[in-house]
Structure formats: C-alpha cells, structure tokens
Length: 199
Image 1 (cartoon, helix red, strand yellow):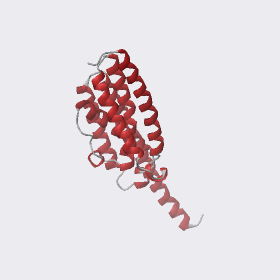
Image 2 (image 1 turned 180 degrees about the vertical axis):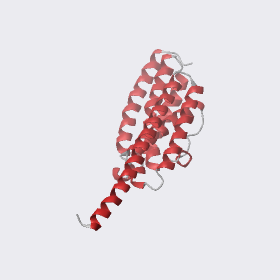
Image 3 (image 1 turned 135 degrees about the vertical axis):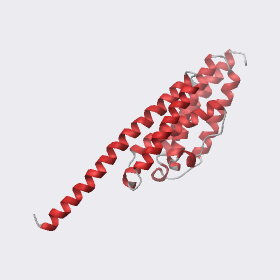
Image 4 (image 1 turned 30 degrees about the vertical axis):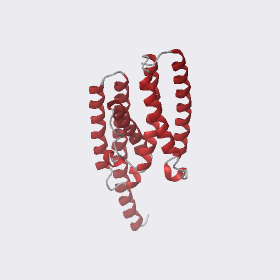
C-alpha cells in the first residue's frame, strides 16, 4: 500500500474509532432516557407523581449529557435513534404537564427538534386515552370531557400541518393514530354517559 494510503488509513481509523465510541455512549444514554421516560409515565398512571417527577428529572439530565456528547457529531445527533428517545422524553413531559394541569412545555425548553416535539405530543394522546378510561372506571365523567377535548384540540392542531412526511418526521402517521384513539375514546365516553350519572 502506498504511503499516502497508509497515512489515510491511520487517520480513518482514528476518526471511526472516535465516532464509534461516541455512538455507543449515545446509545446507552438514549436507552436510559427512553427507560426513565416510560417509567415516569407508568408512575403517573399509578398516582406516584413524586416518583414520576424524579424519573423525568433523571431523563432530562441524561438528555443534557447526550446533547453535550454529540456536539460536533451532527451525523449522530440526527441519525434517528436520538429522535426516538427524545420523542419519549417529550411524551413523558407532556403527560406530566397534563396531570399537573399546566401548559405543555415548549420544544426549546426540552432541547428537541420541532418535528420530534410534535410527534411526541401526538403520541402522548395515547396516554391521555388511558387517563380517560381510568376516569370512566372511576365514574368521573366530567374529567373525561376535558381529556376528550384536549385530544380533539391536539388532533385538529396536528392534522392542520399539511406538509410532506419528509419534513415533518412522518407526522401524518402520528395524526392517523390520534384519530383512531380519539374515535374510540369518544365512543367509550358516549356509552359511559348513557349508562352512568355525571359526577
């Protein structure tokens, strides 16, 4: 092998060794973000808000570590696996804000891409359906109306963004999911209201 190729090979190995190391560390952080976000949502459904907030704080901390790690590595930052973890983080933050009766955190506050934020918001509506079903089981139908209205608002907002999937991160698929969840939830609540008194 000629000397210039030998030198190039040495440089390439240094470059890819570093890139591979960063990618592996990023994958570990993404798994921790995803796991803590999912466990935070689970804790919220069980009524363990303090534990949910602790887990979400940990997920946010890991996300800050991830962004710092990926500085100078835009190819890894936007490779897809990071956005998957960030969607879970967005979803958990939005579910917590709903439980607390607060406004949704904005995407800048969470440090995620706008498209990731919108998809995470949409996926949070699946958790809102679960809240609605819990309210039906507890006979709290007035609370169900509020949750159904929230799902409708998010659906109409996201479905009004008529742009190609290539620039919305496949938002259309998320909108289709919300429509199905919304229709089932409306049917469940209508049936419950016919059978149970409002309280």
